[in-house]
Image 1: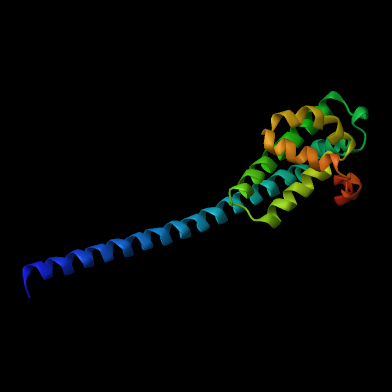
Image 2 (image 1 turned 120 degrees about the horizontal axis):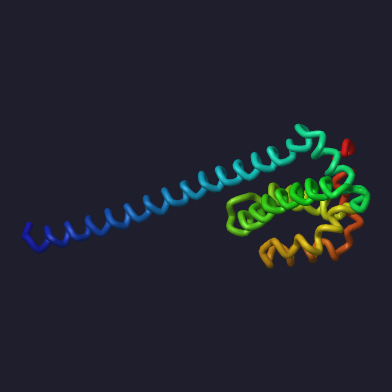
Length: 167
């Protein structure tokens, strides 16, 4: 075998190994993305669970949320403050879930759960009172999405206290 043929075979094998290494790196990146997606989804779902445990662990928060949802005008300043910050906290979770769904880090079914719970809060008396102001605190795309949902027929959306009768 001459040196030219040996050099050609060596270059071919080097190119083949380079191609194989690119395929391997691509597969590793894909696997890493799936692991990252699952991790982000789990973190967001755990944050939502922790958020809703607030009303289980504090009677003051439970009472403020309950009163504001049903009759916002009847609540005290302190109650309105508690309710408003409770809604904002959940809005931040929902906004995060919205962007994660858009970017493929959370599945459609999980996102739909977040959206349904957010809408169930916004159709209450307190949610209706807060929405005109709080919608300005979200990203414009998220706010516009929820604005469309809230201007559609909201008769089919259960109020949060109908989903959770203890409120």
